[in-house]
Image (cartoon, rainbow, N blue to C red; front, top):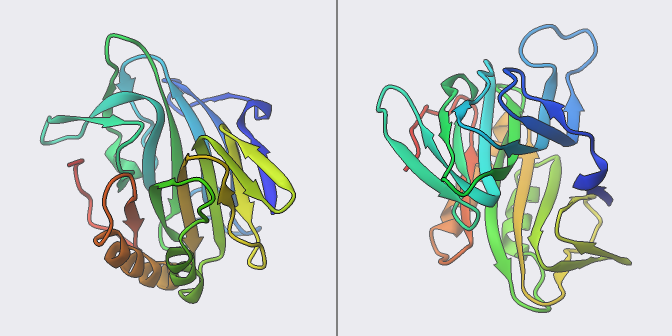
Length: 235
C-alpha cells in the first residue's frame, strides 16, 4: 500500500490559471506515445477560490467530487448551474466540457479529481460512509478486481481508517495493492473510493458498480466512466 498526504504535495496552477491543484498520484503516458494527454490516469486535489471556467482538457474523461465546501457548475449549452456539495455523489463529465464554476458567497471549494486518458483508461468513483469497525464493501472491490481494475485507491474525507499497521487521518490518499486487506473505519468515516482499469475491464467494473450503487442509499453513491462516455450535464 502507499499513503499520500495532501499537505505534502505542492500546489500547481491550473492549465488556464483559474485555480490550483495538487497531484496525489498518477500514471504517466508510456514512453514514446504521442497521442492524447501526458498521463494515463491522474488523481488530484483542486482548490477553487474564485469564479471561472475549468481548464479544457481534450481527450480526458473526468470525475469531480467536492470534499470541502460547494460549487455550482454550469455546462453549455444548457446554461443551468447545479450545486455540487461535499456530501453529494461524484460527477462524471468530458474534459472538453470546461464548465463555469460559481462559488457561494461564503467562499471556496476543494475537490478530488479523477482524470482518465480516453481510450486508455476508464474508472469508477463512489462516496461512501463507513460505520465504526466497518471495512470497505467487499462486493464493490471484488467486482472491480474481477473486472481487471489496475488501481484501487481511497481518499479519506472525514474520520480515520486503519490500513495494515497504518492509521489514516482526513486529507490522506490510500493506494491499495491487490494483496492488501480492506481498510476499516475507526469511528465513522467518510471517503471517496476509486477504481481505475483498462477500458474494457473498467467498463465491466462500472456496470457492476452501477448495479450495486442502485441498491444502496445515503452517502454510498457512484459515478462511472466507460470508454467514450456520452457527454452529459450535471443532474
